[in-house]
Length: 288
Image (cartoon, rainbow, N blue to C red; front, side, top):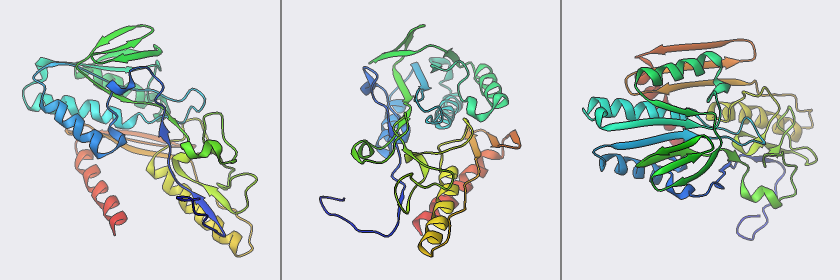
């Protein structure tokens, strides 16, 4: 259904994305960069208006769905802000604190990646507050079961859950609220219906990411399978579990690559311009 209308179809691929869990008291005091342009512009305006103070940056997950977490953008935001403050000569006026309820945030990137990210925070003079359940936000503070963090700006990425419309759709849902999928990306019990990307709960290792690259792989497999079904063939395509990202820090970047067979961690200055080139190319293809 769309706007009260019923749209008939011979095949359906659900790719409507997820939504953020906004249950923490005081969540309105935090800004989430991945919510869109308005959020990013609000962060930019707040930073431009500050001459000093505390900035708390962190993320959380979905306890019922371990893969429903998006920490990479927050590492980038944290390191990017630190680089910008240093380049503009303001770093000494600011206290930066990274927080997360996980003791090892970003663990799905791999143990070496987590160690490297935490070392980088220490090198840059960024404090950490880890392993404590979040309690609430206030206008100038983050409260956890392990204490409080004074902050003039709170940047936070909540955990993900499935789209709101899915709750009453009759589709099979996971404990975390996502549409269930089998190995071929099909929604069990619904003919010629597939789910890809953040909207779905897919079989795979516990580190399998919810990111654009994984959605691309799933979309390719789902499209091939649906076309096979429509042609009377059995769907056989699967999407390999593959994590690849560059954690950009403006003055360099860290490449993280992981599959079920191997992993790679590489830090280099050239990865900053490399990511800018890739993003322009990727977005350009979508714009046509």
